[in-house]
Amino acid sequence: MPQVFLAIGILAVSTAPLFIRLAQPTSPILIAAARVLIAGVILGLVAGRSWGRIFQLPVKKLALCVFAGLALALHFALWIWSLSLTSTTASVALVATQPIFAGILGYIVLQEGFRRQESFGMAIAVLGTLVLAGGDLGGTSSDALIGDGLALGGAIAVPAYLLIGRALRDDVPLIPYLALVNLVAGAALLAAGGAIGVTAQGIGQEEFLAMIALGLVCSVLGHTLLNQCVRLVPVHLVSLGILVEPVVASLSTWAVFGEVPSLPAAVGGSIIIFGIYIGFGWRRAESN
Image 1 (spheres, helix red, strand yellow):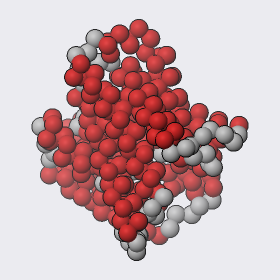
Image 2 (spheres, rainbow, N blue to C red):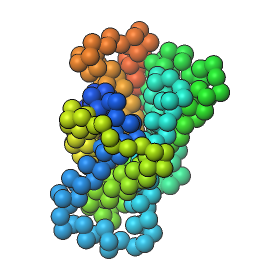
Image 3 (tube, rainbow, N blue to C red):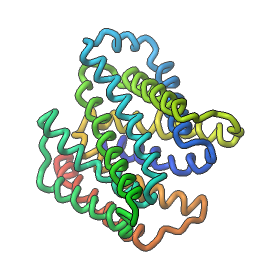
């Protein structure tokens, strides 16, 4: 069952580039804020009376929920900022290194080790992301290096957000937890947007509908399923599965916008898929 949840969740979050393209030229930080706020409101309504479990948590665990929201907001903010300084391919490739940080954080915080086959699969998949980048990392300017560093920060923020969800899996139901996390992330992104002078003026109907779809499909469906997965399997395996996202996103933009993937993207995507296959092999053996 975790494999099914993970597959559907990845397919859902992989539609994000399509909806973001449709929501442009709206400010990226406003798009991100709308995404998580829509998700937070919908999930909050679905949570109903189970909201009470959130406020029964000890202060330290409630603070962890808030920190997870800030980590999610930080991921969006750093990733969006990196795109203005370095190339898209370099940014995506560096953010895709998240399984490495997920494995390290999972070992330090939850003492969850990973097996040799998982490590081998992660190494292959990360190599695939570097091939996908097509030698674009680093660029030729100091701004590009700063952008690469920001993308790495975004890579660290994702497993931190997922890891907290795994740590609290026995203390709070999934839906109210995600509602709070998304609302905290939305508030943080709106505050950041306000600080740099971002406004919502000029948003058309098409852009508005795209942002609603982004919140419903990518966050309410996609991120909810991914967070359900981290309650069942180690975070680094979920992060490994997420590496297929840029591959699926490339195929979907090819189908919708006619953007044919480059040769490095095709080769790198194939390597990523092979690495994921290797990394999840022991799970298949155990299930059989």
